Amino acid sequence: MTDGQPHAAGRPAPDDLSELEGLLGRDMLREQFDKLLGQLQAFLAQAPDLPPGDLAQEAHNLAGAAEVLGLRAIGGQLRRCQQAADEGDTARARAATEALHPMQQAFAAFATGY
Image 1 (cartoon, helix red, strand yellow):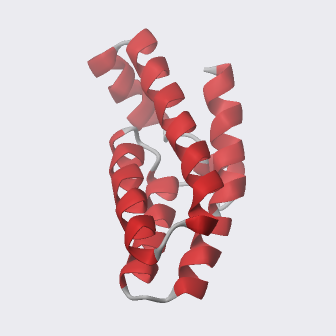
Image 2: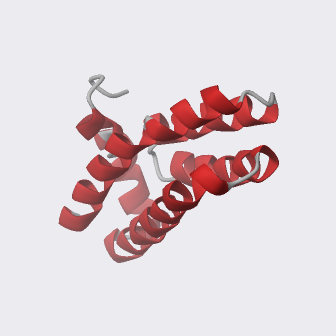
């Protein structure tokens, strides 16, 4: 879990990070963090222009990747965006997307220093 702050949402829990390092190795894990960061940045740039179905699909794809990498808060926020878009609630989907910006910034800071 996070401490409720965006910086905590931008990194895996210590136990998750340790497990991922053991499975993938630090170099491969860094590559995966960098890849996800690029995908998340692209998603946030494109999200305002995406139709709800595309927004839901992209959020779904990224949520899975984030969760696999131990980024539970980011994954959960993406799932909220996906659900809102699937339900046709554009305002809620956009709000969920906007809430990702500080998380993405925290993740960028974490990934850069990893």
